[in-house]
Image (cartoon, rainbow, N blue to C red; front, side):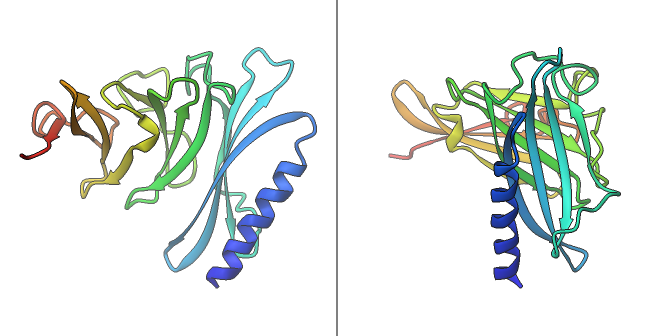
Length: 207
């Protein structure tokens, strides 16, 4: 079964990239097992020409036979409300590189800023694949942006917490000494002020 799923993912990615005649698509794919079913999740960051708000994010789900689950997912503009307001949220500036799920099968989609690799964007979607418009502290978008502290944010780790928040882990420097930063975010996309020092723990090398 595992070999079949991996083959299906590879085939689907090849077919999708070969079909991009009028638009540019950047894709990340994940296979997971939920409620004894194997699902293939696909996220697209699509730049559409001749559109004032040119970038859209599309979330799809397929069963093990490659059939699209029509009851799941959505496609929305990500650089205008209610999903976003940043005009630079497009495939020229950000690349999709991760999708993960909490215990309620809600999806979190992660994109990294390409140019300076100093920030990531995290979108949250419901268990039916719809945008969670309550995510984060800004109510005109459904993403949070994480930046600062990390030396190279592409080398981060995101680990789910038991309360369905997540830990954002990366390395950096303090006075030329290597340190590890651990930030904890709540299920609502806010820094968890109950965690260590207002949501941030700094681990230093021990002599």
